Length: 306
Image (cartoon, rainbow, N blue to C red; front, side):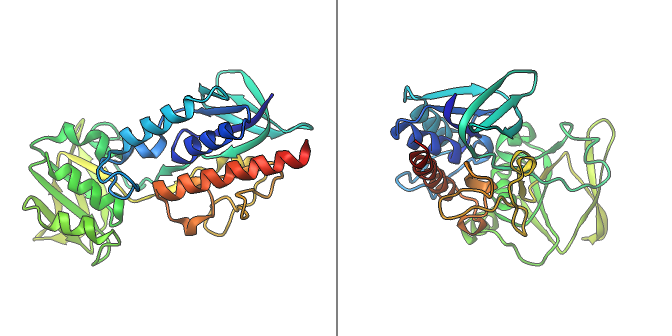
């Protein structure tokens, strides 16, 4: 039995593992994908100490740091369920297998939102993408649409604009919610067209994406001819596991935590994008901070049980 099981291989999970290892707690670090949402960030300009670093590089460094401790055991597996036991928690894996731990930290992050419009699922992987950082290269010299108005959309459009012939940034409002830094960078690019106060109604194509249909005309037509669509409309906390365990969620759907990052289920903690802490401000810095606090919370909790 491990002292703590940390579910999630992103900034919160890696940081939690670094701290639990330094507390000399036997740590199971587990998740299906290395880096989580962190690997989708092409440029991280606000990580203290690094003026320039990419998301994948930052995640790789965090992973190496966490795995440098003998107390940390990392497993690549999809956790299908977490249940309470007399001595702690039991984790079950997709495809079989299980582990037990005295405590658990949910660092499950978030999952990308979908538009839910006709053609979206049909053309997923055939021109529809949810990661500009991952897939921009495939649209070199092509025309694409980016959907959204937050940091993810504006940053994504800036990334795609480096290789694409033309980028349409479609947003339902008349102003962007993104960080001004990214908006200014995008406005400086000649191959980006801002399509404001428009909503995407449908994605069309024949075998692959050939265009999008808007809710009202733009420059005389409600249809834009594009080769690809990047859906960047934010994400939702990945709460399936903690919710099934019985952890209380806040009014926004995040796992409710106290000052020690502990959930309503005794011995279960949450950190990063999945938790209600840090004013729902999903950043590398806040995820790492919450991960450290959660590890400290686990340590103090186990001290009372020993």
